[in-house]
Image 1 (cartoon, helix red, strand yellow):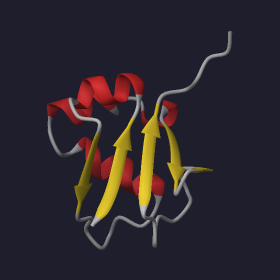
Image 2 (image 1 turned 135 degrees about the horizontal axis):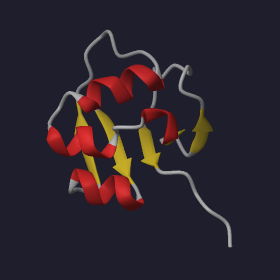
Image 3 (image 1 turned 30 degrees about the horizontal axis):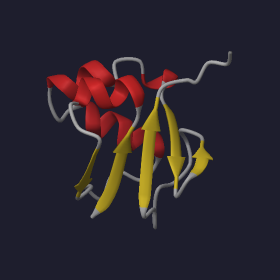
Image 4 (image 1 turned 135 degrees about the vertical axis):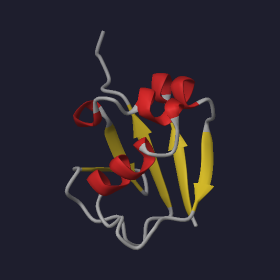
Amino acid sequence: MTKLVYFAWVRERIGKAEEEISLPADVVTVGDLLSHLKGLGEEYEAALQFPQAIRVAINMEHADHDEPIAGAREIGLFPPMTGG
């Protein structure tokens, strides 16, 4: 099981703050994860409609979309942050 944590409008659109899910064997990178999640329902599709805008942290460290997720204890998904 992999713990997913959602932040800001990603959380609002999906409708939950976190969840634990089993990932299929073919989900090996951050990009694969985002594609997989988009197929889980309308709320995920709405939250991840622009996957290139989603930022991801694996075990609380920023990760690019081509990074592997093997061994991740926690994966956080959040929208771009703005300063101010």
